[in-house]
Image 1 (spheres, rainbow, N blue to C red):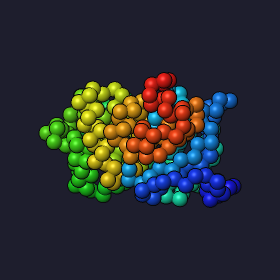
Image 2: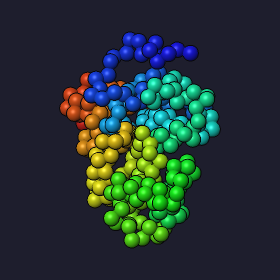
Image 3: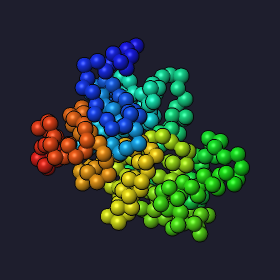
Length: 269
């Protein structure tokens, strides 16, 4: 099997301000006979926000799901190439996928709280992963996670109420609290604000900016304004390939590829 070094040979060196947390080389994804991703190579900077942008069906969500192997759950899906997190091949057959998904949390497009109380939504992950030995430790994790998600002050008097009874924006922050409760290193967000109103969107974007101090965050978004607001780096996907990636300011003000310029100026998408 080729090493990451040989797969990197000839590739342009990424200009990262921090070390790369996630490194992908020559990633291809097939759904049956259809190829959804073609030779995607990308470095994701640690403790920063990277946005994936591009038109619908371009492969950005497919690649996002490769990073915690969610595509494994799709019948007929096949992934080739290599993805490493902290130099560990996440497609190594010996890797514990459950452990990987604790390290790499996921927040989906539509808020999906469990049909449980607010407290139990956040406690679920730490409980099944054995992260708390006592009830007091579990409470500490739950409260800390809700605080990090900017939700605790709004729900502290109703932790036993159903999570599904919260507003859409609160539900999404509850899902973020649930994700960070198991102490992930990477948080994947697949259009986390697309179902939210502008006020709730602003709160989630504020939260993303705060969380990047401690987590590597990757966000798929159809909103170029959102990508410009929240991310330090941006990758533009089109027809299953990464056309270009780099500092967000550079991608939006001085793109190197005509296809990127056409997309960000609204000529297609």
